[in-house]
Image 1: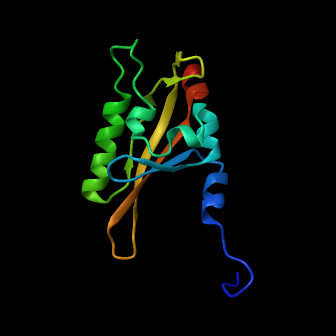
Image 2 (image 1 turned 180 degrees about the vertical axis):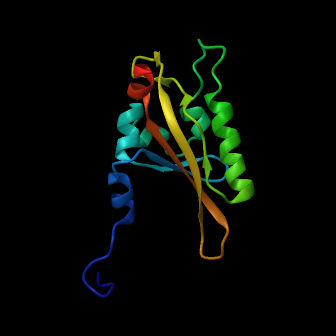
Length: 139
């Protein structure tokens, strides 16, 4: 691919179009980007969540006293920020609020990975959350 002249690569459009479900947060958990497939899976719009803390954008189900999704997510992101290493988690139940305000039981296979600037400073955490609800309900 030529880097001179006529065209520049639109990395934001490429990221947003990835078929995998990813969201990008800053080390303080502020959402800065999400793939279209992540938004489709969670029923959220980009404009509604960008700029929010990921834990506020995707809270625990208040009707499930055993919900630990936000605690697990917070701890994993903190681990990535502290270690600079990828953190792959086992499947996690993390209910998602639908457009009607009802929380639907969901299962995700999450991972969190660091993204560094040119000086080696961690600037983003890539949060991958593949929706595995269909697979979990078969077992």
